[in-house]
Image (tube, rainbow, N blue to C red; front, side):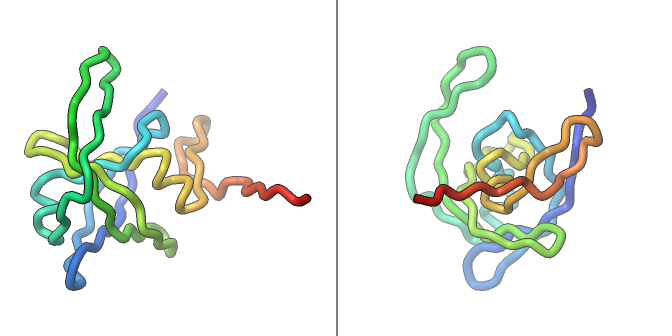
Length: 119
């Protein structure tokens, strides 16, 4: 097993943007932006949710949304407004919004097979 990192750009209010290195974690639900990044692009909290760590510890975190650009794709995604020690992490919700999946064998992002129900 290995780690997968990507470079992606995030944009907030008034066109402020940053490019940063994300750890891809398909086991995490939401994407996390470090405090310096989300403040730098002008994000503001929209609500607060409680997240559970692997050891069962519950953490309240504020949540917002931003525009994320990666490899020619772009989408609005919810993001956890991280604290000073939090690292940039790309979660499953953002992967799904972008139509991507993490291939566990090659450790690369690939287009997902998109499904739709038809009556």
